[in-house]
Length: 403
Ligand SMILES: Nc1ncnc2c1ncn2[C@@H]1O[C@H](COP(=O)(O)OP(=O)(O)OP(=O)(O)O)[C@@H](O)[C@H]1O
Ligand SMILES: [Mg+2]
Image 1 (cartoon, helix red, strand yellow):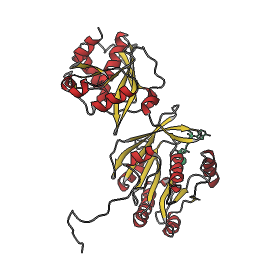
Image 2 (tube, helix red, strand yellow; image 1 turned 30 degrees about the vertical axis):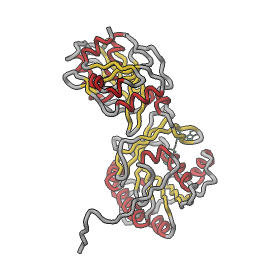
Image 3 (cartoon, protein in one colour; image 1 turned 45 degrees about the vertical axis):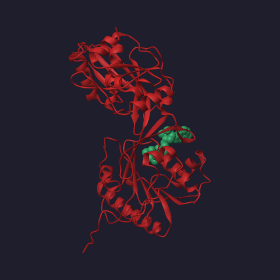
Image 4 (cartoon, helix red, strand yellow; image 1 turned 60 degrees about the vertical axis):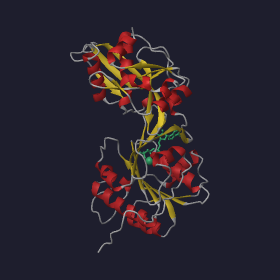
């Protein structure tokens, strides 16, 4: 028999564990929830082990000295120690082990007062009862089940590292996403130093929140001002480039959008996109053609979000359109201008969320003007901001703006 209860009732407010790593706390929704399970996915070599070793070390040093356990199934003890030394963490009271037998791990952890446990990685773990090779879907699922059960029972935070790309090319961790409370992806572009930690599922906080880090030889360093980082290599006065005032999670991020439009040498023109949705680019191009009268069918179009950030906001439409028109007409945009707004299929430019926050960030970074949707004309608070606004209602007006 089960006992049903009412929705109201006494339940203690969950006390989160602050990691002292602000970017991680932000992404996790304000600290780690005891008894919760966090899957950390990401491409090989992106820095998952580094992040979690730093996290363990940081937590083990907070005042109450919670017990932290780092279990590596992937690397030998010496490898982890070498990393710890390089990161300057070798004095932190983290309990380190190299193990892969889940029965053994569970039996050992059972006797501890663990507050945080890292399993690096779940693919290397095995359970004798599950008769398949480590890393197979049934092994991954069975091992995760045992570890999660223990985490809930003992109330420790469990981090599971999973090798998986966002496309989920490996079957295992996709299965895991349903079993855990939080899924974090650690992403970054090869050749770029910065790394983005993104929450794609979170039972204890908002998703789409990001944390930004820079990978240095001393480990991952938090980036307090991502906009400055993303704009660092921008060169002013070049056609095809503009600055989009975006929002990632709860925070504004300015990024440079670059477009290159050039006459095609192919039967069907090329469209290539890095960092944005290619379907969305096709839509913007179609609207510029159909509603703005531009001829883009004989042009190759390349679009790049500089710095390697991936943007998913429709608010970037207007900035993308501006970059394309600027490249097509060879007209550079003012270097101190930001842009945001969504484009609809009939060519109208629509308002987007949090214009205030976007303009405030732009002002903070020294921008002077902005191209924004026409609806903001009525908004007194916005028009009295420190940025001079150019309100634009549709793509035709946008194209005229260049003349
Ligand atoms: N000596 C070093 N100086 C600077 N950066 C380094 C150094 N050694 C490693 N790195 C960085 O750390 C990254 C590897 O980090 P880490 O081992 O934490 O990644 P991972 O995601 O755990 O990889 P894996 O998928 O192999 O487990 C390298 O790609 C590199 O960027
Ligand atoms: Mg690793």
